[in-house]
Length: 272
Image (cartoon, rainbow, N blue to C red; front, side):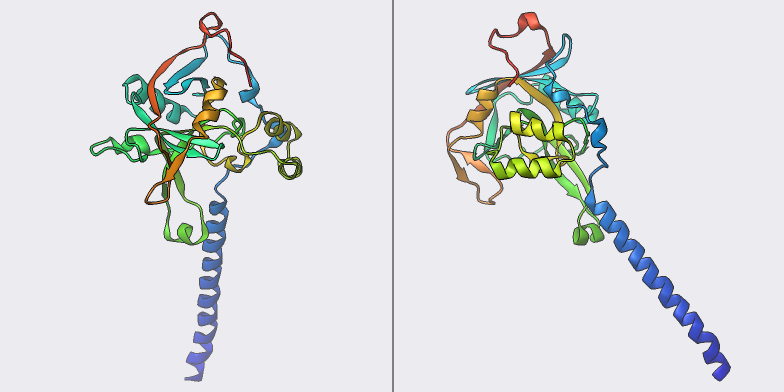
C-alpha cells in the first residue's frame, strides 16, 4: 500500500502541474488574442489620407439630402470591404437609404434601408460578414469613411477576456471630429508613438479612440461641410439605445462609383 502511494503521489503532482500549466497557457493565449490589434510599426506609417487623389483613383460620390460627399477608395488596404461596398453601390442598394445615426458632431451612421438602422427581411446576410481589415496606413481622421461593425464572433474565453473576430458590412460611418482640447492634444502627443500621426489628428481632426478599431474604406476630399451637418442632426433615442436617430428623414439619394478626374471635379474641391 505504501509502495502504491509512493508511486501515485508524484503522478498526481505531475497531473496537477500539467493541468495548471495548460490553464495558464489558455488564459495567456486568450489575453494576447483579446488585444486584437495588429502590431503597428510607427516608423513605417504612411499617412495616405493626407495625399490628394490622383488621376484614375477609384472614388465614390454620395449624394445626400444635405449635399454631396466625394471620397477616394482604398482597395489596396481593405480589398474585401471596398469590393462589398462597390458591388452594393453599383447594384443601387444605397439609393434612398437613411442617415440613421448622428453622434453629437463626431460622426454619422449611413446607408441603412430602415430609418432605425436595421436591415430588411430577406437581405443577404453574407454582405454583413466581411472580416475586419485594419491597416497601419489608415486612421480615423476627419473625413474617413468606415464600415461599421456588424457582428463579433467570440469563444467562451474571448467573451470572458475580450477579443474575437470582428465583421463589418453595408452600413457606413462618415467621421467628423471630436473637440481637440489641450488635454486631448497632449494625450495624442504622448501616446501615439508617432509625431506625424499626432499632428495629423490635431491639425485635421478625427476620432482617435476609433484607431485600429474599424475598417476604413476611403477618405473624403470633397464635402466635409456635409459630414459636419450629418453629424450634428437633431435626434431622438432608439428603443434599444443603439442609435441616435435623426428626427427629420435625411437620405442618401444615390452612390456612384467612378474614377477621379481633376477636370470633372467641382471647382470648390479642396483637401480639408
